[in-house]
Image (cartoon, rainbow, N blue to C red; front, side, top):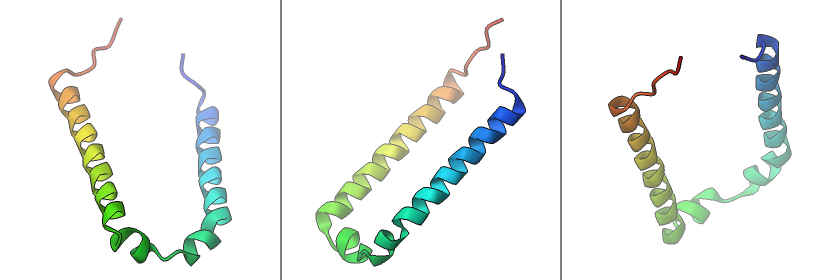
Amino acid sequence: METPGWVTALLIFVQIAAVVGFAWLVWPMIRDEKWKEKFIKNKQALSLIIVFVLIFLFIFGMTAAFNILFPPQTLY
């Protein structure tokens, strides 16, 4: 049984409102940070960012490969 369309639309609206509200609350802190010194010039932080991106790409690639090689089958 699928959820009604209005419920799906309401949930999407609530999620978008939550993201906008969160961004509005943390924007002063984000604006005042020195991002370049904190993440780009710091070699440990930069290496962690690179590792996290590589892990994300690996997981994304493995998921795509398994979806192509072993597509999900619908049960009747």
